[in-house]
Image (cartoon, rainbow, N blue to C red; front, side, top):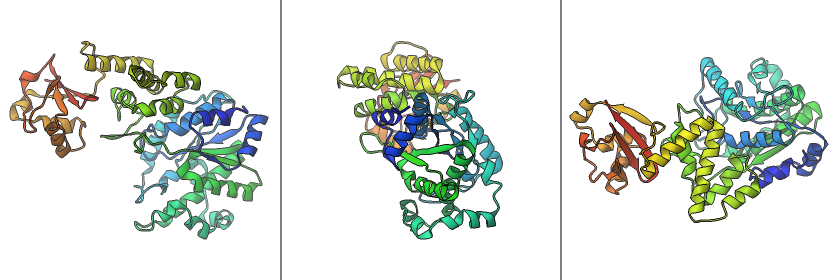
Length: 409
């Protein structure tokens, strides 16, 4: 248990801590209950959410107790952190659906057996609050001057900050205090952009309960070129295979930059650090083998080994001409009537999500980056041609790494 912080540091899951020495001492004395909040503003977690989830999983393996929080209450307001405008407010049915999806996905990473991790939802206490009592008992502990100094609110001066969003920090702090009361939570973990909200929870808990609690943040994850990690041409990479097909999920990891392989291995898998360093020590063909292993392990963790095996086989068949089953590659049906009507390859590239728009699909073709069944598309106005069919399908490639299959009916 006392090695928990060292494990997080070795794996790139440590940015700053409110009182590292005291937290390390507490962890050496026995299991520590910890939490991270996940507002169900969408119907699926993303690979960005996997960072705190994997941190909680590593801490659980080290003997500590995760208490993940689904924000069924706070998502009715929306966290303004990092946002240029107010989030869309959700109805009760959508929140219930999203919360259930989050709980199921969190269960893939954490052990919720007896005495293990415990799932919570802040709707349990936030929806019962009396406004006047909240102002009197909780709001009195917050300094508006201090809140206005936080970077979260500074970023919103130009676009405007609603009063409802201004309350978010109070509710998040209240969550920490309630989890401390109800479940003995002593530690909150989260992204470093949450630092202001999190330390406010320390102050409120101390003022209302007298309990010493701690916060620990992770670095905001970026790729080697400085971009936010987890984005593709289609947007975020989701854990739900209905939103991000398993093959696309596998390919995301298979195509990460050489310089990111070791970092992502440490954060998104449980493989020992020494093994990871050995796997990623070279920049020849062996780094490609490491990428394939990374893709397989993360896909297995999220979708199961059988799905990972199928995605790997489809990738090998598509890129090596091995004639393997390509069923795992994202696909859609295309009618012969539509082909006869003159649909262009640019139309299909955009529809497949291989380019974010028709304009960019045209640019891809002009630059020589599009092919159909391994034959380059020469002009942007070229029309889909039944003569290009192979085994009843068009395998469309954007560059060397992104694929989509149109089956012809």
